Length: 67
Image (tube, rainbow, N blue to C red; front, side):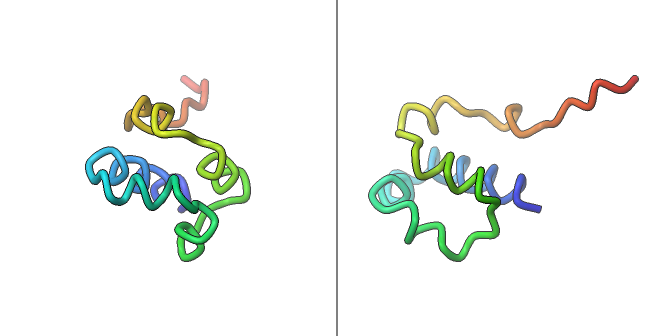
């Protein structure tokens, strides 16, 4: 599932400065082998370092609104 892939990308970028720079330098090429939706790809293509560093694992948890 791409949600987990997106989370792994964000967490790795936060932990590995070289990974972060490669992602930011050319996201289209860097992400070509990752299983992401078009929306997720667009997010990474438009994100900056501050945005990625501000994300946490909690942002990947879905709330269904069901009790």
